[in-house]
Image 1 (cartoon, rainbow, N blue to C red):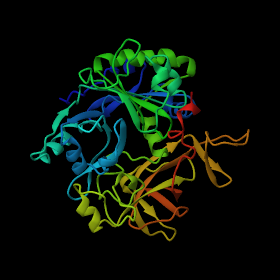
Image 2: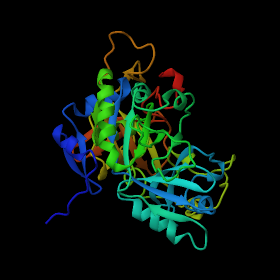
Image 3: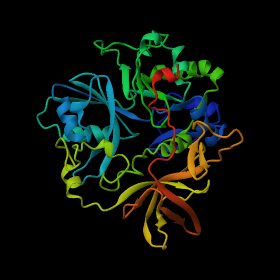
Image 4: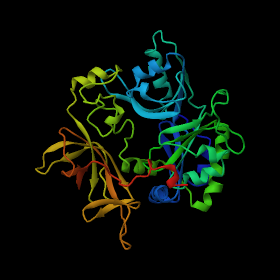
Length: 416
């Protein structure tokens, strides 16, 4: 008998909307709805998309040594992280391999929240406990005790305005990768952010699509009501429910990794996300000691994770059976991820997106495949490669970025 899958508070809403459901990390999650992956992907760039991400796990770390513990276990230097800011990084093992990537939220000097991937709450909690030694830090795995809903797209703030108390104050200033409030009503010392029904939430201006948006953490019992309220307000904006299919395509187009696929199987270096490592200014070393540091410094890993864009919509199935060939046909690696970003295309040999300014009136964007390769040599942007799996081959080129004109970092007043 198959193991029963976990479900999120929005599960039966997804079923009622005839979502295509599948097992993802032990959760029964929507892959796409009747709108389809293409429509959901484009909705995030044009208006707003709503994602159920309650399969993600959260961990609370509190105590006078909480910062010290996390700083040793996490790649980012948290001494530079200000209260009410969050940061992306990774937990590594001693070999320098990524156990999981995560976002850490700092409330104050002694109180943090860690958001990790589905099913990784116990793993990262145990990792922290194993390295705590005699440090004063209380680690609480909140798996199953937290719901998470994400709204992404240019109309996100306008939609949230109608369902938040004191929206004018909340949105007066809200930089990228900052957050406000707390979903835990016991944390009374923090300035609260509440819904119109006075439900406390943690509202974070961050996300994984590359586009403007927010992530919302709250108690699971309140999640469905919020989900339905967002749709009621968002209907006039054309809001669309989005599944994991469009999450993957949006994330890949933004040049962001999928955990345990684009990262995890090799030393966490020589990749597009080196901002997640605490390099010194000269990049000759690191600003702190952390687990995996020695493995990264020794430089034993000779492989490189690189971004690519294909020459059409055609895709290659990623994995060990795929190959990457250089111009001479030499095998130099394999494909980690391959998705289709429906919002990009070539215009006069330059990549543009539907949000790029100055597009010709009659220009229709068709979309392109894109993703990440693992290569045994560093390739310059513009290098032409061939991606191969069985009899299928597609031409692609190495790039620095995939989808141009991302909106995630734009100032809030651009959208309100």
